[in-house]
Every structure is written in structure tokens, then in C-alpha cells.
Image (cartoon, rainbow, N blue to C red):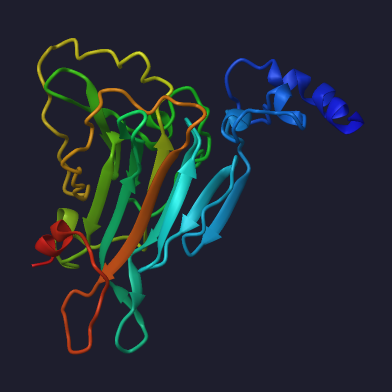
Length: 287
């Protein structure tokens, strides 16, 4: 029991920190064999340690992981409350001649349903279509993240006056999503969501929202603001049951669970072309 006692002394200062600042912050009871807290309760604060994973293999955390997506590979993820994870989505893959070529991109995410809470483990989704991540992209504990780092300055309200999305320069942040689909790149010469794509799209996901309890401040104008429009922001299609709850996920002992998958579709179907099942919305946009 000497080692846990020493660790307890070393981490005592960290456990006294109010809020999360990217450093290790472990409750003392998690250091002992008789601990009854869950993994997420012992890792309430996400650290700034960065890892990259490939092929959809999830990171164990509690650092910030970036998963390099491979077409046709589905992965299941668990994300502790208020933690972030990133997905690096390629827009090119080998064609018939083995040379990389632009493809239609279909990225989709589905959250688990929890019967005890009678709801999905809703997540916030951040799209970045500018091709690269800005400086400070991993500063998830900054005061106004991600709005400050990604320049999100256009807000969208629901009919009842609550914020549901933010947008900026080729970036969009969608709140409280139960399911999410991103599609783009079906016309390399087109404009807007059908426009030429960067080599990578980045999708970031957060479990819950530390500022969403209590509910966000209502729109003082009491009138819904139209969705932000930009020819550079691809379309996302909410699930029919998306945002069924007005609050973000709030259970610190139960992680947000979700599955993600990437599919690449050729611009033109030729003899021998095959691809796995994709959402019907994506196929509709491909015509």
C-alpha cells in the first residue's frame, strides 16, 4: 500500500484543482484497490496527451486521440463525459489503376441508446473542411473552445430559441446529435458541398457539454435565425430522432458510446465496382 500512498501525495495538488486544465487530475479513491468508481469517474479531466490510431482502433484515453479513418472499416468508441476525440477522414483512395483519386465521402456516426436513461448518448459534432487543423486545435480546456480556436461566429437557434449549431470558415459545430451523416465530393468540378475537396476532412466528437446544464441561454430575439449558409460547408443530415432531448448527455459514470464508419464512393460506377452498404441519403445525393 506504500505506492498508492505516495501517488496520493503526488496527486493531491492535482485533485484540488477546480475544473480541468489538461493535467492529470485523478480522484484519490481511484488509487486504491478497493476503488468502486468507474473508469470515466477516475478520468473526469481529459489530458493534453495526443495519440494517433489507425484503422478505426479506438484510443483508451484519457488523452486526445486522432483516428485515421480507413474506408469500409467500422469502429466502436467510448468517450467519457466532456472528452473529445478526432477523426481524420481522407477524401481520396485508389481507383481501378491503383492510383489515388477523389472519391465521394460518406462518414456516419450512430450513438447507443441507453434504456435506463431512455435516450441516446448524444454527442456534439465538429466538422472541419478546410483541410488542416488550426494551431491550438487540441486546447480543449480553453475558455471558449471550440468557438475560439475554429473561429465559429455564426449561431443557429432552434424554433424555441436554443442554440443548436455554430459555423465559421469551413467549420461547423452541431450540438446534441444522436446520429450524424457527412457527405461530400460527388462532383469534383462543382461548388459548395459538391465542390473540390481538400485531402482530408476532420470530424471531432465531444461527449456531453459542460455548458449545457442548465440549458443554454435562450435567444434574446425570441425569433429563430435561419441556418448559416456557405458554399464551402457540406451538408449534414440529422437522424429522424436526433436532438430528441433538449439536454446534452450528463452522466459522468456512463460514457457516450457510438460507432463510426467511412465509405468512399466512385464518381462513376463501372464494371466490377462494389461498395458496402451506405445510408440511403448518401446514395440519393450521388445521383
